Image (tube, rainbow, N blue to C red; front, side):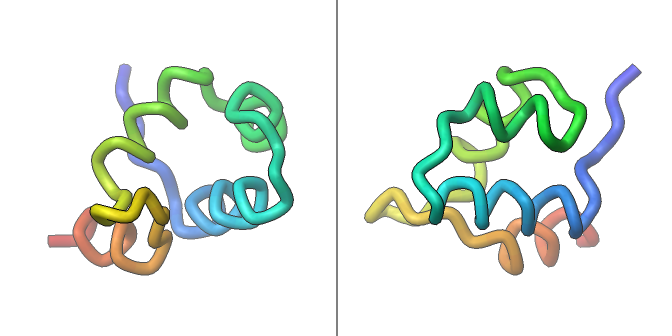
Amino acid sequence: MYKQLIREQRYAIFLGLKEGKPQKEIAQQIGVSPSTISRELKRNSNKQGKYSYALADEMAHE
């Protein structure tokens, strides 16, 4: 069953990327599969490839 990421998980993704951690490591830290991280980044990164956890969370609540 699919569960949406919560705001704290999105923020953890943002911080992990900022620290240069690989997606697999970020996924392990927040308890999701690496493919979840990959999909989240594809859906919620801007044209420059920067991930915005705040925008992602806002869009998830709409």
